[in-house]
Image (cartoon, rainbow, N blue to C red):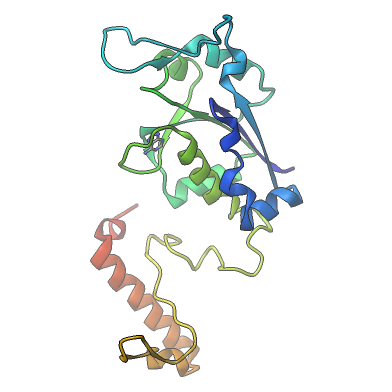
Amino acid sequence: MAWHVNILTLFPEMFPGMLGHSLAGRALERGDWRYDALNIRDFAQDVHKTVDDTPYGGGAGMVMRPDVIEKVLLSIESPGRKIYLSPRGKPLDQALVKTLSAAPVLTLLCGRYEGVDQRLLDAQGFEEISIGDYVLSGGEPAALILMDACIRLLPGVMGNEATPDEESFADNLLEYPHYTRPAAWVSGDGATHLVPEILQSGHHEKIRQWRREQALKITQERRPDLLTKK
Ligand code: ADE
């Protein structure tokens, strides 16, 4: 059974977007995953197709109505894990991505404006997930990123490309540096840049060790928080 994502959005035309290309796009064509982008506005009950209203207690912006979103959810036969994309959510990391790509069905709620009425999130048992400590104009780009990270882990999607166990975050380490030909590259300013000798030695055990050291060093320099994680 194909991995299935329901997306609740005011902008269904944003999907599949970038996920229609390259690796994810080919996987979509093969039927390794599928999606339904549901337009929240189609479920509005009044002639004006109202999906939002002013916040109780005052303040800027508009809040998405719980009754309209509930109607969308009721139209979904089996919603699986319900996720609301929000900067207040649990930070998305590779461990969470793994569990999401292993779930048969996800339902992603993309907010716009100031967000969604809290009662809907509570009543429907939404998990909140954030893709990082910055604020997007809506949940759609966050949904696309979450999906991209999951799709490449689906069985058969990666083919011969990088093996998921060797890449960044597989063991909470950033990846070692990569090199390809030419072995001696002369850049535009006339400087010669050599590939580290060890990588041309053919000594697989030493190369493995060197890469591990490089991964540790770069993680220590850039993301020491990862070294104390879990
Ligand atoms: N919506 C707006 N900003 C977001 C973020 N950082 N992560 C997830 N959803 C969002």
